[in-house]
Each structure stands twice: as C-alpha cells, then as structure tokens.
Image 1: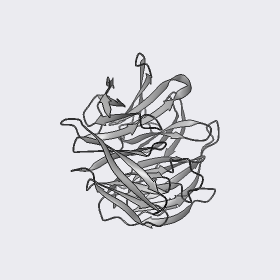
Image 2 (image 1 turned 30 degrees about the horizontal axis):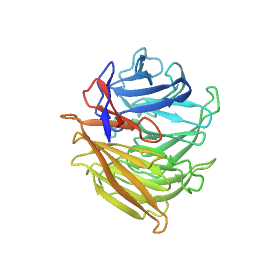
Image 3 (image 1 turned 180 degrees about the vertical axis):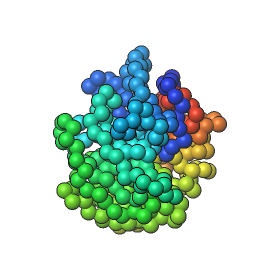
Image 4 (image 1 turned 45 degrees about the horizontal axis):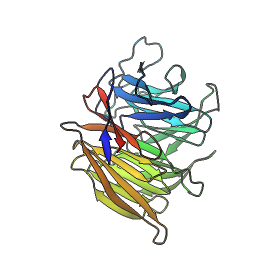
Length: 335
C-alpha cells in the first residue's frame, strides 16, 4: 500500500520525545516544512514536492538575558490558525512562537520557575491550535490559552485551564472540520486522563475520561471521537463528549510515541518503540453510533525507536517518520 521514498537528511538526530515530528504543507508554494527536536535545537527542513530542493534552518531554545540557552526543548509543532500558520516550540524555560518558516520569533512566554529547586520538573509540552487560540500544556497540569491576532505579535495569555493533576503530554483539536462537534479540544496527561473542552472566549470542560495510571502519550480528535495512544501499546477510541469506549486495539508491543489522523480519509497512523508504524482505517457507523477500526498496513523501521510519525497531507497519501538517534526523516507514499 505504501512504499519507501528517498529520506530527508537533517542536521542532528531526533531526541527520544513523544510526537517528535512536525509537518506543515504549504500548497501554494509546493513545499512541506518538517521539524525535528534534538536536545536544545529544532531542526527545520523545507522540502519541495519535486524532491529537488531542500533548505535547512536550526532554531535554538531561548531565554531572556542569556546568549545561548541549554534548556531542553520538549516539542515543536505547527499551529494552523484561521488566518496564519505559526510554529510553537516548548522547553524547560518557556514557550516560543515563530512565523511558520522559523524566520522570526513573534512571542516568548516564560514559565514560572520556582526559585528553590523542587522534585517536580518544570516544562511545557502539548501544543494545539483551536479557532484563533493556541493552547499549550505545562508540567503542573495546567493549560495556557493564548489569543493570537490575525497578524502581528500582540499575542496575549487569555486563560489558564485547570483539569489535570499530572503533566500534560499532548493536546489536539477537532481535525475533521465538522461544525457539528460539540467539543473541539482534547488534552492528555501522564496518568492517562483525558479532558474534553469546548473553545471560545471562555473555555468549557465537557468531560473527563479517566486513565489507568499509564501515560497517554498521543491523542487526536476526529468527528467527535477521541483517539488515544498509551504506554501499554494500546489505542483506545472514545466518544469524546460521553466517554463511551468504542474500541480498544492492542496496536504495539511497546510504548506508543505518536498518533496522527488524515482527516479526509479517516486513516490513522500509529508508531512506537517496537520499530513499527501501522496504518489503520477508522469508519463512523452512524446507525450504531460507533467507530470501526481496520488494520491496513505495516512498516518496520528496523532497530529504531520511532518517536515521530505524521501524515504529509489530509488524505494520508504520504507519511513521514523519525526515530531516536536517526539523522533523517523517512518518507513513505502510497503505491
């Protein structure tokens, strides 16, 4: 179903972080941007669709009044807002927001670092755009909501959401484009708990879906269905608003590190420490108000702890993969 394409080389290898791959498709310019985190650096690659042109950029973690920061970057993710695309980078010190090509930093938010060291590490992780807001999770379990104007750098912290007791691991907004979905944002934490939200001037929490004391490492929201991947290697599909469990799949032999959904086709990508990338198909069954999952395809990246996997387009025609200590982005396209 898929075959391997020529890999894209990156300047540094990928760190072993959940969801360590960002992909943004720039259709008017026939380009795709990729981001991969290595320690305190984000490796950016701009790749032309014909495979002939690549340009590289590196973004350093930053902090005020320091020339070079050693603070580790936890995640880099593209955020598609109604009128602009931005790149968000989270670290142990704060949150950096860049123009999507990485050329200009438009906003910096410092995290509250306690003056006396505590047992609890401080970092930001879990990034999602919903409407004109960018939401970022932090290690305390809080979610910071930033109101982003259609242009310029007048970004403001508009809300702090409290629903989790453990560190945020991942967040996602409704990706199907459906206006009928009641909830449009989901967040996950280190204990496996999920919170379902409705965005707006005041964010409302609709539901808490309890975990099982096992980290939920990656989460997606598609047509009102929450798709969650766990350290057990399982994928669970819930009806987001009610918390009803639709399906449970024993998808991987080890920790899942990344999930992605192609919203137009209902294809689901899962990748984990077991060196496997799997493609599934989700089908909504309106008559039974349920979701069916079918396994379609496997790729094995031998001897590689996969840490990022993303579709490169909304139909799932192609996907890309990163692995711990690999200095390349591996690409697959449909045959």
